[in-house]
Length: 326
Image (cartoon, rainbow, N blue to C red; front, side, top):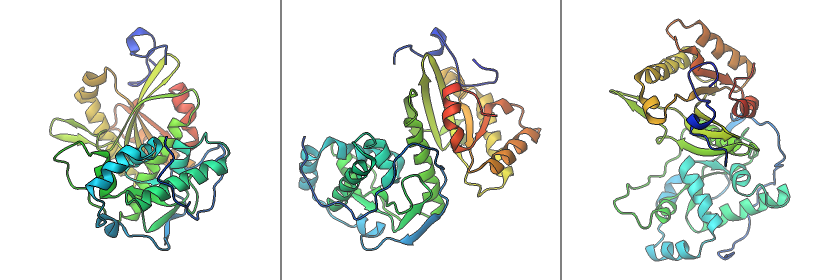
């Protein structure tokens, strides 16, 4: 284990192992510009913000009122291509996904970048026409998917399709999210997509909210995202916080104190044997240095080595080495 409190262990005691249809239901593709899918560093943080109304289509509220019969859902459950079901599950886990994120997560190896994009467009459009997906009334810029990307969410019918055999499920409500909530959720999704795209890194487990929340005593810690990764014989556990530079640094250090309290409670140590590294992902170097300085200078933070603060371009180095880039 490297110096500090968390995350990296090797050998036997680490728990880290040395090992590591149908095309039916067709419709026409969306009229969306193709985007370059080449590798590179892209921000986890929307730069241009959410702006502009999507032309046509249903609102979130209208989609929530659409009726898809049980018989139709049962037919789709049997006849839908497996990759379409995978896309629905991906969006359910993450709440919202941009088309480009879906493309990179599911179709990045499908020939050329242009053909992968066309497949993603066809799949999302097909799911929309079946009443299973709805796009927000806004498009997103700055997330790697592309400046004109649609943002997708499950409709109540899409949610029901994924849980046909379950009883007593709560009703899924569709609502138009606030700009900040949508940007933050898409940034968490982007982190997940980028993490899964790092060659040679095995993503053994992830938890999105609320699965990644941790209760201790009368308190609840709410990370944005938890990941368990492996590189060779090394394993690492991570709590991630996405910082959009919308909060004062003092609010960041207050959240750090919550993590510190949870660390001293011993809850995570009892659960997995170590405490995950806490990683703040900031939009740029200036904000990174500001957050690092506030953590360093806060005397109430006695477990400072719990915390890493990075920019998106440093994610791969950190996950590969288990160290915070200098």
